[in-house]
Image 1 (cartoon, one colour):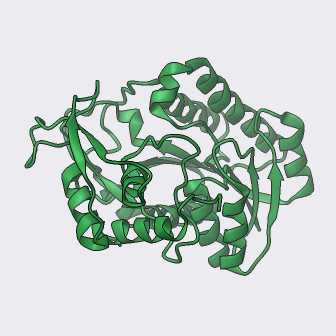
Image 2 (cartoon, one colour; image 1 turned 120 degrees about the vertical axis):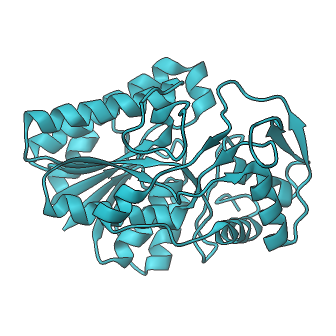
Length: 337
């Protein structure tokens, strides 16, 4: 049994590859390395003590995607590949729509051709946009506020229509909240190719001396300390959620959607203070203006994943901060040493 992992060299993809191999699955990876580095997969192989097939290819290249299916007996696909920066998507929306949606269409067409009808899609809590209430359930209104989030919602719709057209498909849509942390070995972690778009890699870069301070956007939210509250989830917990979803899609048909988070919200200041306490690194920060569209609080209702997938997050905020720092201190320049 082989599992194709698209975008497997990325942050969440690489951690999921390691969990898949550790659970006894054979994997095949395709990644164009535009937002990732091959070194991550080399380290996955070292940690797992096992090699696997890698294709340096783009989902927009139909011939390469078909080659992957022709040369391997694929049983299911975990689909991570895609552009993923919210701010960048606002600047270059056409590139996001073309890459994320067209790449998925090509993938699904070739899956259909080779009768591979099990897929797990890497979606995002971005599809909820600005939720009116927390916690956010899978039934909450879907109103993404940026092109990145809209590509995720469009792809969810494409996969839903695919199942309606053919009930032999088995599809899980996984809506992630805020992945942080790194593998406990310190060998694989988050390594942004450009300026970090997320809070934790920014904190890491301040801790390692690459940046002077963290900018905290807004201090007048209706929260206990005035900063925005979010649901942070350890990337290893998130990766294990994919294994639970994989077990389900291999055994059933249908389409379902699951929030993957902890169900607990922490503020920006909570995260910074926890990081300082766990790592003994001082993290200077300043307050700046709110960002458009940011909200007081957003965290997941994870009841459905617990009841149906038998999955729940096990790592706490201290684990997330410790493992993030452990990765960064062992890899000052990420995978480029």
